[in-house]
Length: 582
Image (tube, rainbow, N blue to C red; front, top):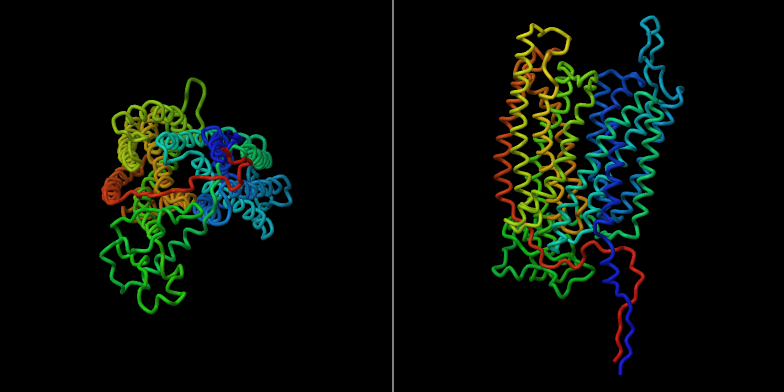
């Protein structure tokens, strides 16, 4: 006779956490965060020039520095997330920093004494009243701007990983849901961007900047509340220390052991065995690439082995730690090969706006604002993402057997091809626009050309598709390939591609202008050679794609042997172990 006590186990309780329900909170928070951030990215130049009395050049450079810094600082947010905090705590902390940044700018925008006397709309007779911002006013301005950049960077690094943690990538069904997660994450980010460039920009233009900054602060505050409301549903990661430290240890140990011969039997290299793994240590199988790094895992068998330094983390590393370093080394060429695509995207975002100002933007009696033209690709993305996720992926999955339909490196490659096509189409459309100006003797006219702005839709639609494939493919690829202790770092590396793309765009224009003798030197697009510039970008994109093919064919996917962790809660479930007494 036996007495059994049927009680829920911890495993059963963990199974109830995560999944699409938990990811919904991440989707909404990502949309709100993007809405507030993007609205400032596209409109702050007006605030800097019209209310802080910056020159147009200084205003543009300040915005560029703000955007680039926000993307680059994601490395710092990733470091904290992987090393000290869970991804949930990182999102909450950095969101609070954002709230403070928006609030500080809102206070400055509301109180005129915290700003210089604005030159905007000042009559020429009163130009002497215009003044530059003093040191205190600039301190408030830059303090608020870079608090926003810092806060947004941490959210960028941790939030996508927090959502991805809700799916088990080792399970085929979980892997399929994980791929779908990144598609829908971009969907909600796109919705946020659309609201940002329309609703929030309208608030700033019509209700005042204090309202714009204030509502942004409140919106991010609401996102913190929503993120916290989903706390009971999340699966949490447990920080394992700095991945940058582990990588540094491998490089140092490999250098110190550089004169030691690699053992014939690779089993002699230092590794924690499956039965010895503790605390959810992820064990990765050895690969043949970068064999020089394997020296970091060579145990010393001579008299030096008796010293403590010979067994320290800076002298002896596990094969899994070595493979983690190899993964990062293999990732870098992939991310570098996507930087130029983001450079092309930055050119489209700037020059297309200028092109639209010369074209007919009317729909009946309504004229589309030139600054709202980017809404066209965003609307298309909202249509294409569900089509890709719900139609293409299931069909492709039947033929390939891959949960995501096609491999992520293939997806990125198709996106790079479409970016080439987009640049070529942009050149053709610009040639057509210039020919219309010549045909109607409007080369030097400020009037709108008899050519619809929707001609620009062709290049926008193609590039929007390329962005869906490449950006989502990168996020999915880097999350899946990275180890459990560097998920946030991998997300930050992806955002750095965007940062370098923005930074190199202005350099590309300056260099090409100088080398070409002034293709883009005129203030008149009808006399510039923007079409030549687009053709050059298309040609360089072809070379860049060739580089990507080499990198992707050379890349070796990681081979996980054991992953005892997965995303687990850093707050133990309140359950009891099922016991049976016979």
